[in-house]
Length: 148
Image (cartoon, rainbow, N blue to C red):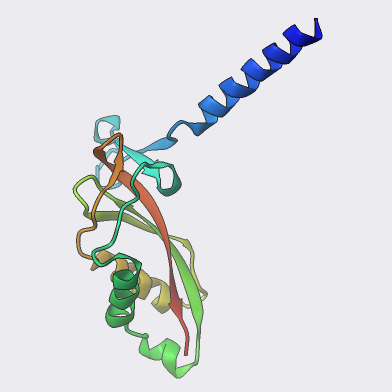
């Protein structure tokens, strides 16, 4: 009897591991749609749950260089010595284009938040993420720091 119980619990544990190791995704609605119709919905995978993660041209080093070269410290924030970090999310589409840019956690200064959105909106196409060898849309999270 204990052997059967052991085998049964092992089977249940293996089933749970297989279920939780599957690729997780969410469905989102296209915010550009005037009525948010479900026909505009796209499947978006989370960054950590794809086989191949999206990559900025030039990798992480290229991404850091892009941010540093594109970011312009807002005059008001610079003059008042305001610093902070803006945590943004965006979707890298199956075609590599960046879209659905949002602020997850911003600063008290709106000019820093707007600048972070601007920097991300100017990003070039990324190399798309993949699941099962097929390009898919992937949600990414990126902090944009403003330090003096």
